[in-house]
Length: 64
Image 1 (cartoon, rainbow, N blue to C red):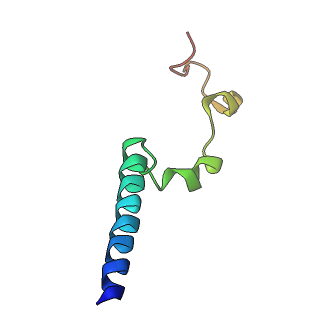
Image 2 (cartoon, one colour):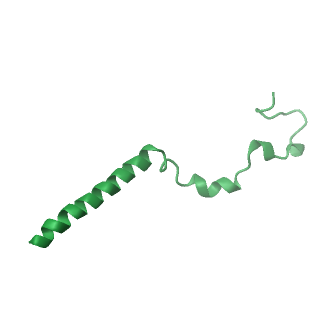
Image 3 (cartoon, one colour):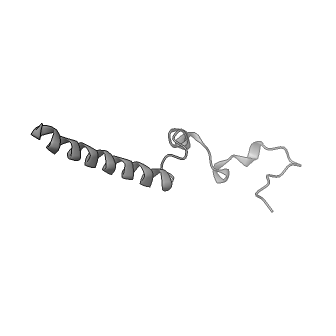
């Protein structure tokens, strides 16, 4: 029984620390979009788009 009196508070303390860390990361938005990070290098920004292939009469929305 003395082992349980020592190990139970330690286990609850570790579980509490992990719960606090999980809630902190969820509140800061770390788990908002887990899939976008691996596709970000494949996406082109609008400044890198080759505009020479666009039809002559059409303009992009970001050009004013």
